[in-house]
Amino acid sequence: MKYAIVIPDGAADRPTESLGGRTPLEVARLPHIDRIAAEGRLGTAQTVPPGMAPGSDVATLSLLGYDPVTCYTGRAPLEAAAQGIQCRPEDWIFRCNLVTVAEGVMVDYSAGHIKTQEAEVLIRALEEQFGSDTLRFYPGVGYRHLLAIRGETFKVRTTPPHDILGRPVRKSLPKGKGADRLRELMDASRDVLQDHPVNRVRQDLGENPASQIWLWGQGQRPNLTAFRRQWGISGAVITAVDLVRGIARLIGWDVIDVPGATGYYDTDYAAKGRAGIEALRDHDLVLVHVEATDEAGHNGAAREKVRALENVDRLIVGPLLEALDNGDEPWRILLAPDHETPVDLRTHERKPVPFAMMGAGLEPGRSRKPMTEADARKTGMHVAVGHELIEYFLRR
Image 1 (cartoon, one colour):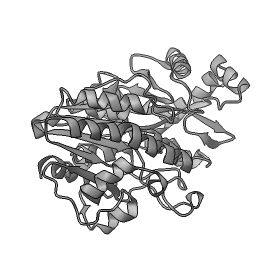
Image 2 (cartoon, helix red, strand yellow; image 1 turned 90 degrees about the vertical axis):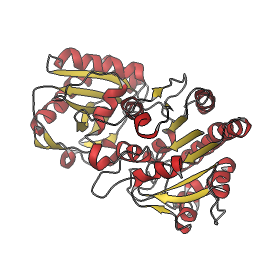
Image 3 (cartoon, one colour; image 1 turned 60 degrees about the vertical axis):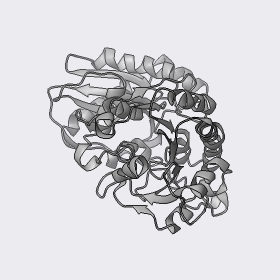
Image 4 (cartoon, one colour; image 1 turned 45 degrees about the horizontal axis):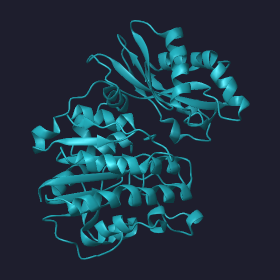
């Protein structure tokens, strides 16, 4: 059996006036995704357990069969695994966003979606200024970076910067044991970054500067059971996002790098589709993850979200289905967002997400409906414990 999973991150949404009272899934032309829903099983899954924040870390773990309640330790350690950073059990890892804060307001959680090359120069400058044997900055991709602190204890509450867009940051600064240390670093970063040549050029070009760092998503190294040990299946992932790469590495999957995969609107969808087909030649399962839908939700860009969904359908799902149809092995395919990122809210939501799956041994449902949030709810097929969805997909 060959298995394919496609995750359009944050694709689930709510009706919005900008789309005439419809959701992006309802507006987008998705013939291949709708085929999966109509010819297979359509339903909903609760990927975020009660009491947990609705992030891609928690939700992706659920979709891959791991119970976040028992295995989740934080977002940043997952991203550290993607970068091959060797963490000790006592190390604390923090997500380190480059952000734009002006007059105390979170203007941009991504510093204008700063390019990786520019961001790396800034993170290196912070490392040169503050780095030591017990504190290290690690450059990542775009605005997403990491900070590792050793020999200190933290019991803090932090807030993702994309949750406070357009709002004063004061009430959302780190709180709890060790929070003073984090606030000091965030404040000190402003002095290093404000007059940096990279930011001066960005401002001259009318782009948002990286005015400071924002620390959040803290945690320590998790222990995850290997996917092959649990299911007897080899896996590979195609993504531009370190969080998903890190989960893949921790569960023993291969991570396939695709030139042109950016994690934004300009990602090379077609290259991801081709890489997914190629990966199925020597893996039992391939996961193709697309971040553009989530970014559109955070930016409040409904039409961009529709375009991203249509690109996923045409350039990833369509080619995958064609290759599976023409192959010699039986197959199954699953299409599921990890969580909602409504364009009107511009942040994540914890509501159940729609999913659609089809393939060998999966009897079609009775609804024969397209892949929309409302139609998924009407089927009555609901997976209340999100991490159990993978068992249905792989075994039933």
